[in-house]
Amino acid sequence: MRQLEFDAIDSTNLEARRMAAAGDFGPLWIAAKRQSGGKGRRGRQWVSQPGNLFCTGLFPHEGTLASAAQLSFAAALAVHDTVAQFRSDADTKIKWPNDVLMNGAKIAGILLESGGADGQLWVAVGIGLNIGSAPKDTPYPATYLRADMGRLDWPLLTDIKQKLYTWFVYWRDAHARGGFEPLRTAWLDRAQGIGAPVTARLPNETIKGTALGMDKGGALEVQTPSGEIIKIHAGDVFFS
Image 1 (tube, rainbow, N blue to C red):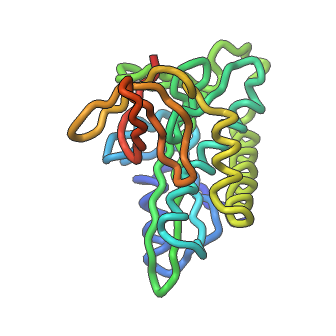
Image 2 (cartoon, rainbow, N blue to C red; image 1 turned 45 degrees about the vertical axis):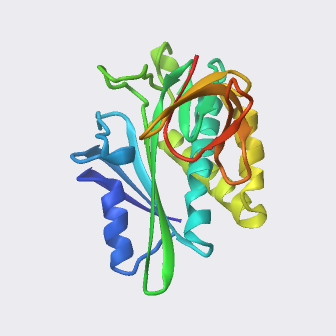
């Protein structure tokens, strides 16, 4: 698979969008040592500190836009499995929908974008993985892959990157063969907070209850104290 490497760029996701607009839908990976305009979900800034990994996979997609959105779970599984492979000593979990946590702190950000051009759907999967440092003054605890490791044990950035690419292709292929269910099953096996109290902050309301699991469409199922089961399709969730 093709790989493009930049010393500096505005955003690997923006570069993927530019390539798709020009008729190149991949498959390929774009990585950069530095980003000047990295973004997270909902337009939030993603701090791009040197020594961390910033990359975007660009892939043609043969399904619907709804099925393309499910690849955010493939990305979360790929990040989880990469982190777990290099940090078998740590507790690695996925918080709905695709926040990967190491020892309870966020270690990565995932931004999935999709579109179409010339009759072809495409998906761009942006991943920022904290390796050598984590941003400070964040609204949530943040960590990095090499935290609390001896210097001699540090994995190489190249090795981490290649493992991440390999894991994502593995889970993308599983999705192509079996739909969302293989991703859902694997996600539930790695999930944080299932069966625990949860607060979901939505644009117009806050829902509190118990996290039951994830449905076949990717929504988080929350049971309120009254017994009602509410499906959360988008929002910020917090586990106590």
